[in-house]
Image (cartoon, rainbow, N blue to C red):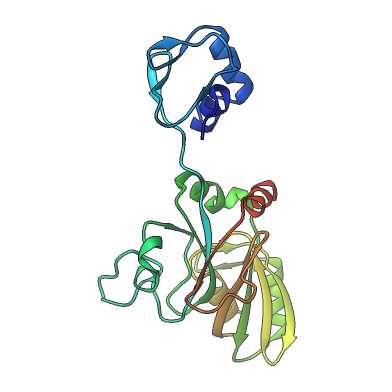
Length: 232
C-alpha cells in the first residue's frame, strides 16, 4: 500500500513528518533517482527513497507480545547447563522475538517479547520507573520485616528501592517494584524473614497477564503499546 512520502520518511526514523516536509522543500529527498518537490507524493517499499543521498527504509512495525512463562524455564536463548529455555516453549514463528527483562528459573507469569530493540531499551531502563507487579507466596509473614522492605533496604552492599507490599491472606503478598534488579524480591523478602516459595508476575506497567494460559503467547495491541510508552 502506498503512503505519503513524508510519512514514509517519518516511519524510517529520519525525522518527524513535519521535518520530512522541510527536507522535501530543501530538495534533498529523491524517489527512484528523481528529486521530489512536493510532500503530496506516494511511495511504497518497492521505491528507492533517499535523503541527502542516503537510502532509507521504513522501519519494521513494532510487535509486542505477552508470554506466560512456565516454572523451571530459563529466560535466555541458551543455557550451558542444558535447562529448558523460553525458546524451547515458543512456537517457531515467535522464536525471533527478544525478551524484555528477565524472569528467573522458578518465577512464572508475564514476560514481554518484542522485535524492537529500541523498545527493549526504553522499557528496561531503571529511569523509566515502570511498575512490575508480582504475587509472592511466602513461607512466613513477618510484618515488621515487610515494613523495612517498604522503606527500602541495603543488603550485602546493594541498595533496593522501597516496595509496595499488600498482604492478601494465605501467606500471599502483592508486591510492586519499579527497578527489577536481579532476584530483587526473593533477596529482599528473605532478608525480611519472609522467604519466597512461589513468585508470579501479573503485570508490567499497563500490561496485564489476565487469563492467558501457561506457555501461551498473546499479541499486544498498538493502543496498549502507546499507553505503556506514555506511562513513564
